[in-house]
Image (cartoon, rainbow, N blue to C red; front, side, top):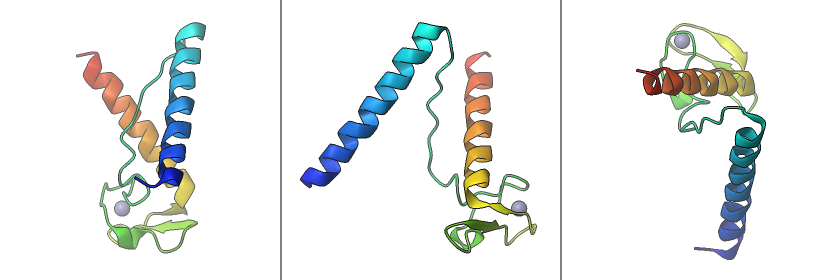
Length: 91
Ligand SMILES: [Zn+2]
């Protein structure tokens, strides 16, 4: 592993560790969500394709035509995955 990647890995690990710790301390809830394809999946019809991401900033679903800022799409998908994980853990 390259030294730069190792430093980045340590940084993300520490951010996650701190978030988990602070949320437990304040009585909040911490849910880790798998981030893969969150910026390529349509939140309206769930169609997943790299072609949905026309540019770094814009998302346009090639299946249903849903259009939104790509960061907003990523946030919507992360929220849905987190809610799905919570629901699954409560069953
Ligand atoms: Zn769609």
